[in-house]
Image (cartoon, rainbow over all chains, first blue to last red; front, side, top):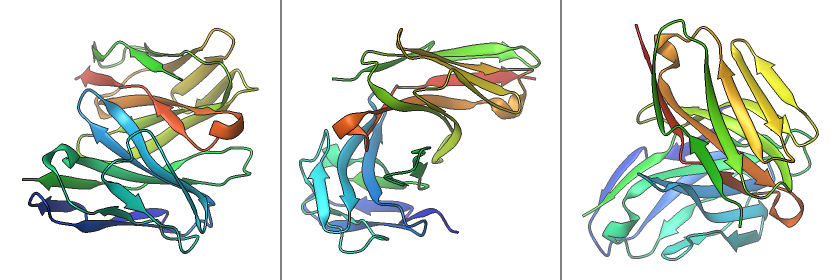
Length: 114
Length: 114
């Protein structure tokens, strides 16, 4: 299993540009989520999904959109990038009914918005 | 709202020393607690996961304990090595309707000096 994969690893955008951060997992996990990590703030939840076709907002959803058309993929869209969205983005997944409930994280996408 | 605090924020020890990292959380209604390791510029690696019904988990030189009623967890690292240098993150998963979400502490930056 590849686990949780994210692309791209690095990205530089100009203010106002749009882009999609890709996330995929091959573990048949129901739960998928996006976090952002900022110095001094820790990791904060952006959006999450409990299964295909179901998404909801986390703590810091403004400026981001998500969709979940398949179990495997959970892309994060920035419609109009702002410097405040400069951050490291992590995708995570877990089984919904697992007794362990362990969450697995991707390697991250480092985004800079100029 | 769940809040997770990690003390100390940074710790520097000589090689071979045993050490304890602390994590506290404000809401004891948790599903599980997970300890992660993060190397500079990298993603999160899961170290140990403790279910709410468990008191401790061990993996090699690592031992994590959980006192759910008092809202505390500790990560004990025995015979520390320079390769243990990293940031250690504690995260709790809420129970009930919040059992998808991890709330993270800000981490402890550990440096083990040769």
